[in-house]
Length: 85
Image (cartoon, rainbow, N blue to C red; front, top):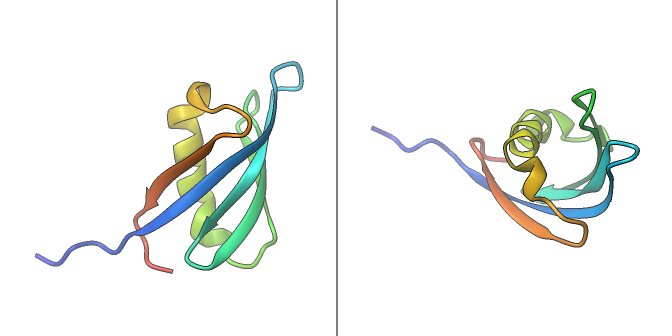
């Protein structure tokens, strides 16, 4: 059976505010780089720029939901995306 394609994504948390219920950072993968804002009380994730956003948005949201309380400003994190881009 063939292995599924994967890409490693790097995430950096730039700002976190519990009073505003907001997490901001950068994520890069496969030569693309995006900025993101996650309003974790509403589950709203915005990713900019739009170029390549469809490749990362769902995987990023799943990762954020999984590890949200472990993330800290200034922290660098890595996760795997099940796609090749």
